Length: 211
Ligand code: SF4
Image (spheres, rainbow, N blue to C red):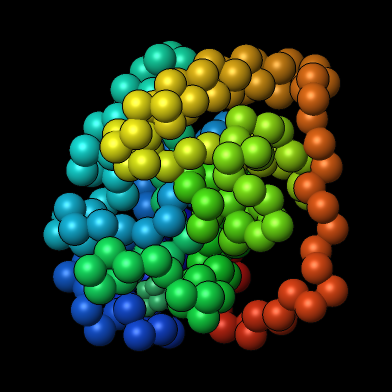
C-alpha cells in the first residue's frame, strides 16, 4: 500500500539528506493513475509542508495540467529524492541511488501509462543519463512498456521565457499522447529508450516494503 510506503519514507535515514529536512516529501496523488510526474527534489516550500510542488513551480504545474484538462488529484506527483538538499543544491548520485527503490515502488503501485520526468536530473535517473534535455524534451521513449516523456522543469520554465513556451508546447503534445495511450494507438515518433550502460551501478536491495 502507498500509505505504508510513504510512512517508511517519512522516517527514512538511508542518506545524509534526512539530517537537514523539516519533512520528507514522499509524493501524492491518485493511485493508480494514468500519468505520473517525477521532479528532482523538494524545495523550501515542499520541505516546510511535506507536499510536492507547492511553490510557484507547483502553481505553474497546476496550470499546465489544467491546459490539458487534468487536475492535480487525477495524477501522481513525486520526486527522485524525497528530502530537500541543503541550499537546494543538485542531488548527489549516492542520494539518488539511495532513494531510487522508493521511486521504483511508487511506479509499481501507481502503474502509470505515462511517466513524465521534470528536469534533467529526473530524466537521467528515470530514462537515460545520456539524453540531453534540450534535445529530448517532449519525445516519447518506450521503456519497460511505459511511455516516458522528459519535460523541462517548471521552475526553469518560470525563469526563462523560451523554456516556458517549450513546456507549454510539450504539454499540448502530452495531452495527445495520453489520449492515444488510453485508446491503445501507436505514438508517432516514439523511440525506445537506449539499453542500460554496462557500467550502470547495482543498487543495494534496501527496502523491506513488498508492495
Ligand atoms: S532522500 Fe530518500 S534515501 Fe535519502 S533520507 Fe530522504 S527518503 Fe531516505
